[in-house]
View 1: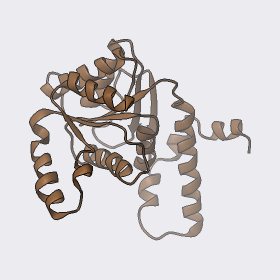
View 2: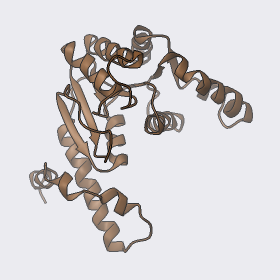
View 3: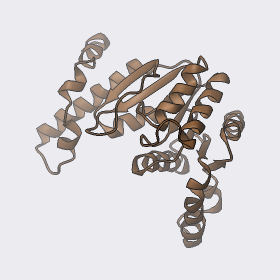
View 4: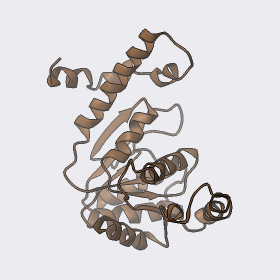
Length: 237
């Protein structure tokens, strides 16, 4: 099959054909044929992402909750960090949804930068925000996470829930294990991260599950301007 034929298969109709595919894939033991069919679907979804997200400029991914509305202090911080990144020539990528993702995309768009979203189709909460220059929607969480990591050379972690922490710790694990370059990972959100810092130091470090150097894989920023400083310093290192 030619690259053009593969691209056509991975077009806009692909998402409809994938509805429920991840849940089916993860439901347990299945036939070998079903698993092979799922492998083809995953490949086509990844191909679609590669086609849509072929970036030429440096990119920073901003992770954060969909649940903080406009007017919340965290929303304002995400907006400011998106704006500052765009002003310094970075493309800004998020999960494409509402809340803090929307805020970062809005900041980037209004600063004249490139605003990108990798959305995930979910029953609740997740809908594409209106501040995206490029937008790709995914069925498989793990394919989406590959795209959120693949194109970026720095990461900002805003306050969030299970999904945000999953994304953040996957990035840190990839860096820890040498699967990803030592790109900057910056936590922004003030007191939200205070108890997490205590847990990392007082539980994980003290029990020996991480070492001192690994503790420093995540930097805590005081404010959006400080986050930008940490990113620029890390990208030049």
